[in-house]
Image (cartoon, rainbow, N blue to C red; front, side, top):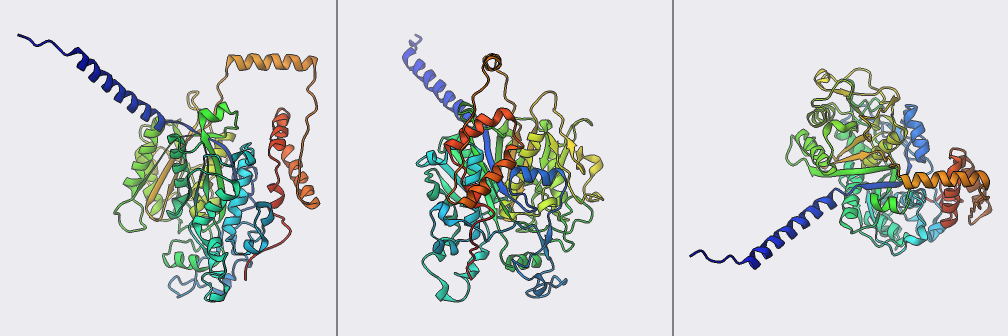
Length: 547
């Protein structure tokens, strides 16, 4: 006799299985939540002290590399063309930013005495993070107590030699360790702004800042953060790290970063700071934030064992790109441009291009090549800030729908099989065409000397036309014909008269480049969060360096 089925148990089992499948589906959906870049700011070589100035440098193909300025160190006292000369460096060039000794501590509630002990990397991080938030239209006072995460890449501690590592123990005071500890740099930023999300300093050398972006995206997708600051900082204040890289023979003796070129002979060190402000895309749209670009996916891995501790691993590079594509949910052929790590080393360039070709260049048509370039040819290798410099460049290229020229590419590297790969290097400003009416897509790679690799998939933001919004715009325009818009109140403030004058001058330049229809929004943002830090960047009242 056939036993009677226990329908209750069967239904319960089916319900539990459906519930588990639903949870797995929700988890998969959360992992693919797109993240919006709603603001960014930078201080890069060549006077690129804003995204606008950075784009000007990029589109005009400017090489910002110079000899080491005397304000850093006397390179003639350390120079020797022999790479084996003890205690000497053969590289006398770099990408430098101006006035790293300038800071307005009282703006951030820091006493001048404490500010002297602050690593200029901490000072610059405060300034650029503040202005990035303002560019994102965030009322900074309203962020206090919020679940805003902070993820920052920092590697070197050159400034500590003036106090902690000077050899004179009497120069160490209560502020020295706090002012030169990397974890305190991000901790101080969260403290000054009152942020209570996850806060961490990262150091995987060259991939630090792009890893910061990757982890910030994960935090947003998991709901751990609702807003995030991510980026990196790097300053060259003493010759010791450069001497070390010379002993590795990683640096170019010629003073140029010739990525992908047959004469590539190493990279040029660079410095700067870049910060992006991130939010879940759906929240950014709901909050009517400015969306500069969308991070569709990202991934990170490690080289594992390779030909050497610092040697790149092509298989690992290809794997991390494939993982990022999978998380983004896009096909390889949809990616039109990759901002390569591109250090300009004879070993690294062929390995990277072959990895790109393996994942992204297969089966491409002649009218859809994979464009590749590297900003290191413009500003040098910013090391712990290199990834975010590449990211901001790519965001700007998506916004302008143009690919900036890649410099110093005259004779293609013969170890790269160019004829077998559908890969092209732009040597002039190149229009970025759309692909079958799809949003433009780009990849950004950052591979650390430590072995940690990161790849990010970026998409241009195309706001969908909504009928209701279009009707509202038509109605608004019709009303405006009858009733012209009222005047708007534009407010600015500063703590001193000179600062107020400088701020007004900066706004004059800024407003000259903005569309008239943006004026109400600019006035609203200026009133909600007074743009004070603009007056503190570049021309403060005093110079403070210890020693």
